[in-house]
Length: 152
Image 1 (cartoon, rainbow, N blue to C red):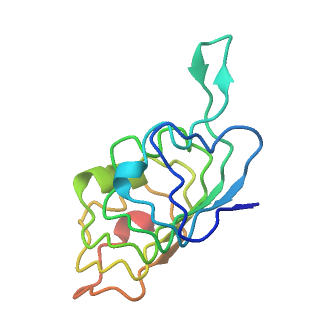
Image 2: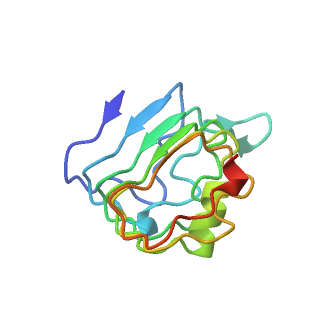
């Protein structure tokens, strides 16, 4: 388990946390923003034979209590094994198209924590194609129950 010291500014666009056998990464209580997360942040090892990066081995990623207001396109490109994603206590406020597409791109995501992110609503197509089994929406400002039909 890796736990980055509280309030450290450690993520740049060229950092890579997905290499090796890393399965669990706790980046809670830092100052991470959506701008500091990119396609390369969570990439796996470089595969010399193919000349590309492998998918990350990370299965559980904790990004709660940061300053993430949105997710850039391809943020989770290399996280095909991710089963748990915690984005709680970030100032998301709105799930925009790029954020929704990033969440929908995770084929094995079963636990999604969006609690205390100031959400007032969720897009009707938010959960289309997702396999989420445990969903946290506590502590938000939702005025209606989101469409959860795609999860059944």
